[in-house]
Image 1 (cartoon, rainbow, N blue to C red):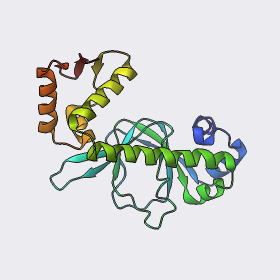
Image 2 (cartoon, rainbow, N blue to C red):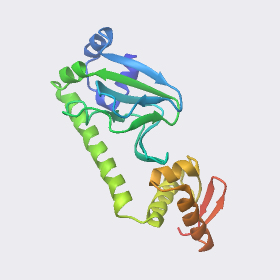
Image 3 (cartoon, rainbow, N blue to C red):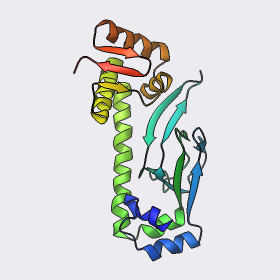
Image 4 (cartoon, helix red, strand yellow):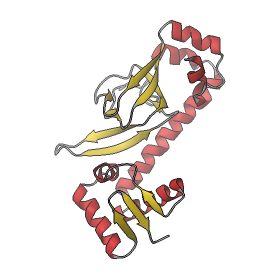
Amino acid sequence: MIKELSSLNIFKSIDKEYLTDFINNNQIVKRSFYKGMTVHEHGSRCLGIDIVLSGGLVAYSLASNGSETIVFEFKKDSVIGANLLFGDENKYPMNIYCTEDCVLFHIHKDAVTELMKDYTFVMPFVRSLSLNSQGINERIAMYTQKSLRKNLMDYLIDMSEKQNSHVIRLPISKKQLADYFGVQRPSLFRELKRMKDEDLIEIDNKTITLNFL
């Protein structure tokens, strides 16, 4: 367990005996979740932070019509709850669930408070706050400033770079992609069809060929 903790950026420079004390006092606990499981429910109180060892999660809001809007994504080394733990309103503003099997380390608030005395913990912790803030700002910009076409183009270009190919395979379903952009599926399908009709892309189920690059 110590080896796994030390593999995380936030704990790389922390003394191993120090971490062992927290583990022995159940202030650092390893938790496993299956794909589709909810880790934190909307309105539940934040009692510590969670750090992702493996897997992926999303924070999403649920509209009255039942549609989901993905607001933030978490992957290895992501810190969940850092922006809530010491706030006056420390309740999760949205649901957080696993998009794949996950392993998290839960760090109790008392342990976080003690670790904040260690500079080697503080800087990665502050960086995680900054990354969370940047991610939220990017998503706000996506919803308020960019068109769906622009968001789609940016997303497809990003996937192309990650997969090192002009022929990309979507890592999520089209429903999840619509949720990611905060739009209804028909809106996403219409825009994809327009892009196909304009010969910008070719679509074959979850495979998309980018002709505009």
